[in-house]
Image 1 (cartoon, rainbow, N blue to C red):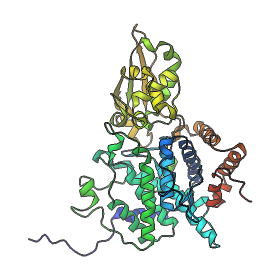
Image 2 (image 1 turned 180 degrees about the horizontal axis):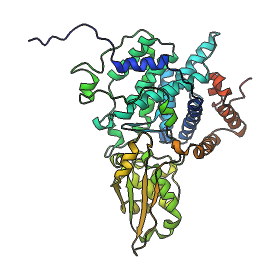
Image 3 (image 1 turned 180 degrees about the vertical axis):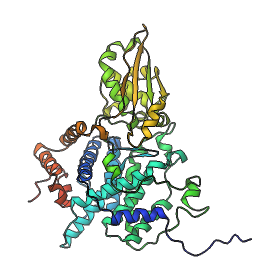
Image 4 (image 1 turned 60 degrees about the vertical axis):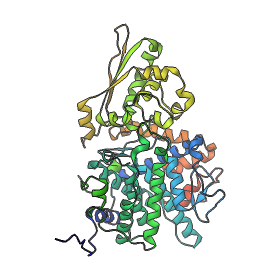
Length: 487
């Protein structure tokens, strides 16, 4: 009997090949996918602009060494920074994710596909400025939108049947994988280079979910996506410089991803890569809140007028929810920081019942000091509703349902309010998109003068014109004090 390991280098794992073939060969025909990608783009950038109002975020933004300026570097929207593509990816990704207000994908694994936009925008902008400097044609925003659709698809399809959270890994591993794939493509990478980059993303050390759960919930969850997309760009750059890959990174016995990190299970793919994820992505339109709580907060806002005048008379509050919400945001006891609060279902519902709204400022220490919040949180009971859990995983529904009812000490009660699909769900797209555009406008208004706001809105909502716009010209509009882009 021998324990000698065969030295013959194997063919690449099928997962690596499937991702590379999809990125290179799939042609996106549906106009609706590009339309949705355009809304994802402006929504993510708007969230990033809003995050600039929070010092806990801005202290992480900028070059590693103060004062560094990179010739032909990528712009960081809303700032004067111009950085190398890796650090720019971290900056953009962190800004987009900071307030937990960007788009979402829910399945066996959760995540935020627009986390990839940090790497995509930084790479495309850096390539464009470098090309312009040498007299070449820059990349167009159409290529950014295509890269977005494909990154969303890679992350989302891998998340459908494969739960990384159940083995203690954070979902941003999929951001790293998707960013590495599409950014290698943006850089002109061929099939083998994409396979190499994706294999490097899987062989990397993967982040634990420690920072997303009590008792360690903390602000790293707000920059983990930026970290992952930046790492994806770095691995893409390495692959383009000829760095080798690891063809059986997933399947190698003992040393591979499946055996080391996934309990020996292989990834399950329930559908081929196409444009399914972009077509079904979830927007956070109403509230900067963990997505499993969106409908619960909607219910609380609806009940606010009946409840706010009787807060002292409340005996208990009952929330019926789905299993995933119980697993990650059902939280009792002390809440130590904003990151703790925006992942607590009871806190979000209590704040909305008291105030009739939920904003990013609701999680700050000053707001949380209101003693009514902890008093009301203590009266909230959360239970699973089996039907909600089933519908959450149904590919034809993908509901995110919550039901809320308030009971008073005198025996009276409100009607139970049920919301199955939040405003950002595909089933409410016609209702949600105008509100999303207004959300974008409000974020622009916090950073730019009116004339600059209108230029950005006009360029962003131009269905045909945006795709033809050079990436560097589009992002130059987000520089404070920017002049009009020459026509």
